[in-house]
Image (cartoon, rainbow, N blue to C red; front, top):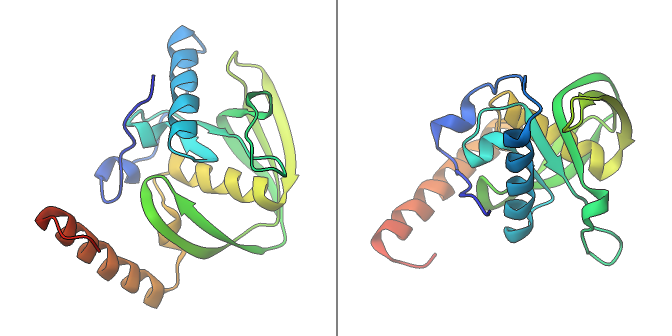
Length: 176
């Protein structure tokens, strides 16, 4: 089932999500719905809070060289924790909860994450590049943070101004 994605400035996006304690059919349904929602919205990652469920669960499915996403490559990270990170990289990020806005963000180049899968089994992941960016971006959601908070002051102010302008135009039916 495709769920509605909540968008900035919805207050729920700024809440810390709760630990997942039950690895049951309800969690599995949530993860399956998140996958359908992410694919339908052309995303590569989605945190549970983005579909208004405050649980520490996220999914990531990076496209292959041809831009196709394969379900067998889907990562489901439950209760993830970054154990170690190294280096820095700058990547242009976007977010399904901040539609149509992209900006360069600095993050760790490499991360090691410990998490649980949908059945509660403990797992570990070491990664770099785009997957490391996606993991950090989605994990920020679990702590109530959006990528726009990482922007320098002036870029953040510019974003706020553009966002208000878009919202005002949308309400009045004007295309921007």
